[in-house]
Amino acid sequence: MATMRAVLLRKAHDVRVDEVERPTVTDPGDVLLKVEKTAICGTDLHPYEGRLELEEDVVLGHEFLGTVVEVGAAVTQFEEGDRAVASCVVSCGACYNCRRSRPGQCLGTRIFGLGIVFGSLSGGQAEYVVVPNADLTMRRIDDQGRGNDEDKLFVGDIMATGYEAVRKVMRPGDTVAIVGAGPVGLCAAMAANVLGAGQVAVVDKVAARLKEAEAIGAIGVNASEVDPAEAVQDITEWRGADVVIDAVGHPSALLSACSLVASGGAISIPGVYTEDSIELPFGELYLKGVTIHQGVANIINYMDETLALIAAGKLDPSRFVSHRMPMSEAAEAYRMFEAREATKIVLDPTS
Ligand SMILES: [Zn+2]
Ligand SMILES: [Zn+2]
Picture 1 (tube, rainbow, N blue to C red):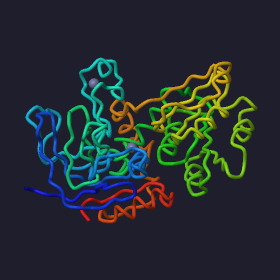
Picture 2: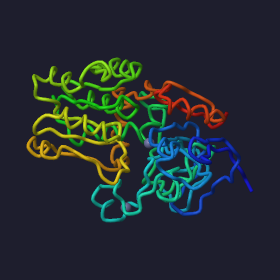
Picture 3: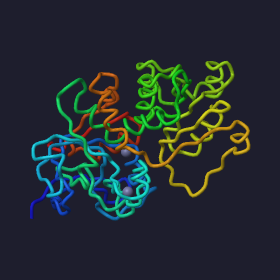
Picture 4: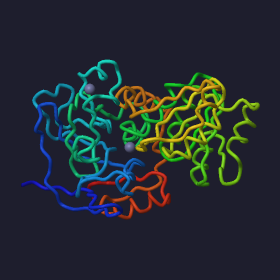
């Protein structure tokens, strides 16, 4: 039995790197990828902190890129040796929602590294990973144009997620307020810039993250020093923000978003919610005519677009990488990421 090293979640807050069986191509649409770069995502904290219960020893991770080493018989877009990035969400391509360009709502949606509930796909924080429906799920990456591997790595999740959250609701010239300067919030701020936002304000309490936001031209709003609603009123002549992005995924962030949004504006929620119900000021939202957009991101709809913008030098999300670590130090990496000591961590599975 061939083995590989992988990041396993034993139980909440207990991550370790161990030898497991190396996966192989079993479906004709599969590709086996030798992983070269893989990242820790905010969503990984749901199982890590025990909010999403996984069976024991799930291989974690859904942001990765690498080289194709084995190809299923039905795969037409990739061959051995190609380098590619995969969408973190796998869809079937054939169901009603997929046919209507809503792959995030695919009736057979699967996500890497999140256990049985999300389709039992082994994760990408490993030396190897099997990518199902490869022709649909992956995009080739090459050295043409600008952008490095880490820029392209994020097209499989945080960059496409932040981009969609903005693109679905924003018009050129809009004021965009982003709640949460984590990786998705920062990617959303970058997307708002490239899509023609007027002003972009980013709300957070972590000074280092606000600095990242300011470095790409956003207005940093430190919620531990000022009232974010007042700050946003100030820069919009008391209208509020045309677009508010909840890039946190916590009810308190959503409440904050409700207080920031302008009449006729929109709240877009790339943050992940697993709560059964949340209290919202619905009468106020009704009177203001606010549109709410949310749901699992339609990553594959935006991979080509974001890769093209990276190649053109207009998106460079790799600038948000704060730490590069060997995969063998995954336990420490998860601890740091949870403690907000790191904005974004990329792991090297070869060391
Ligand atoms: Zn993610
Ligand atoms: Zn489908």
